[in-house]
Length: 565
Image (cartoon, rainbow, N blue to C red; front, top):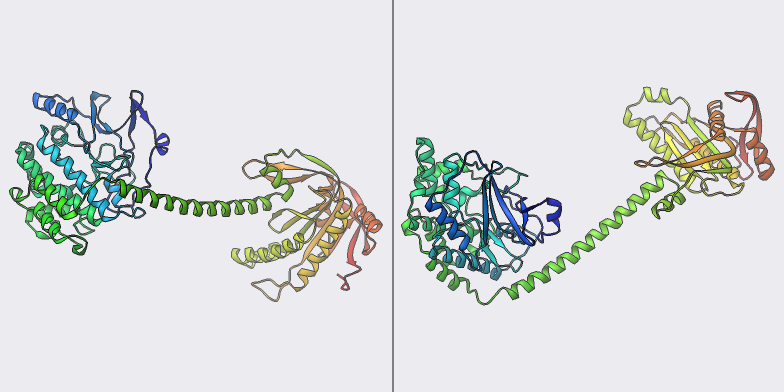
């Protein structure tokens, strides 16, 4: 036996997750195995505390369960016990899950004929059990009714209820009620008590309080079959009404207390009578009779359900309609998911373009490497907000963020109109480059000059959002020369610039004057040579760290701009 993990199971499941509010169990048992070469099995696992010993009756019961063969019974494959402190019961795997999964899945629209076919399959399987050597099911619930690939309902977990209960009573195994998100391989659902006949609940509670043996184990076969009829009534109501015949907020404690007190408030009742044939309502009420002897036999139940539900033929027609609906639903889901994927790709592309230059981002998306590269001619600009610390000290964090967002949004709009790229923003520092990664000859000189002047013009009209009387003042520094550039990092890749040109541009900003654009001498010489429409003014000699005394200039205006900065 090879255990199949959850990842392998994902490709085997054919129905979406259940949306029932009554079930605390995962849609499928998480324990699956491959027996031999191709027998797919699901198994229930129970922690074993003591050694289990089989008597003649136990062996006969297991032999009968193993020998049971019917179209509406799920084959019992075997069990493992007294090994690894666990008891394992193996049943054949059914790919479409349980009846519970289907009837509580709002995405699956089942017509009345399909519901009726489910009821028919359950009654046929139960009829076979009651007339077989097994004699009864013992734990009939909507999740013990499996659906195979052909949409045939097959009963599972039949004939083992007594053995499980006896081993539990003896302390050989333990059964825990499921909680949300837990594995359902061996535990019982919290709602399982709703399927149990009142005489069974009452006997168990009395025995628990008196610490006596479980009288239910000594019940006659007729009483056990009557218990199956009660459980079938609950399951049939679920199938027909897609709900339980109890109040939504009922608990196990309420059920036990109600049964012991004889209160009718905790007995099953038809909640939605308009959905069910009146004759079926009478049949349900007979199935739920408090007196086990007053409940109908499975043969009578089968005859009445076939008459009232008028089920004829196979499920082929219903299956065809269901497949058509699934195909339509799948097509709709594919369209929705495709739209979501396209939208996600657009957001990812937008984010990538914000982290990296468009050219670099496109190359990376195509899987092409981006090796570091040295650019012989490029221009770099730094900006810094004057008095940023003072502004922060008198404003809330939200006001500071709002202010920076407004300033940098304006700067970004300016940059997007030119052949420039914003390298990064750190606090109040703003770094822009032109001529990288797409070389543009000498246009980088004009580009950054235009950007710098337009930024100054933008700030002339800008007012601090939380303090309208204040203006934002910045220093700008520009330099030109060779620059090395490359993508750094994998988790959050950044396009970074390196070299003396970057350092010099930073020094131009840090030694600059508020509301002035300070440029280096090489930048001024090249700008005047190629773009004489720009006016520059000598500032004088400035001490530059690592360079000594250097002549610097102010970029004043462009011929097309009439306003002097």
